[in-house]
Length: 79
Image (cartoon, rainbow, N blue to C red):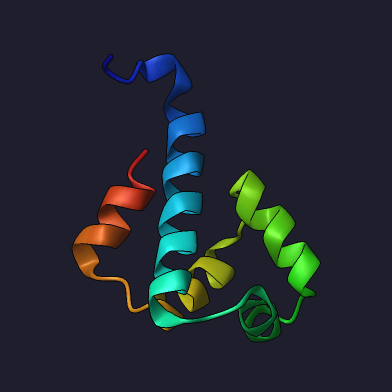
């Protein structure tokens, strides 16, 4: 079933969460490490990851640490 435009924000949040979790697993990173990079607790990182609620500065740090390509960033961030 194709994605409906009405739920686009929800799908973008899910895609971002799944990409972050997958890249962290691939690179062997833990929530504790990502939380330290963002100056938040690992629990706060997990909560923000589930909700897809990161500000631009945090997204920059996440993408840099997880070695995101330009294509991945565009795909994850297009509205």
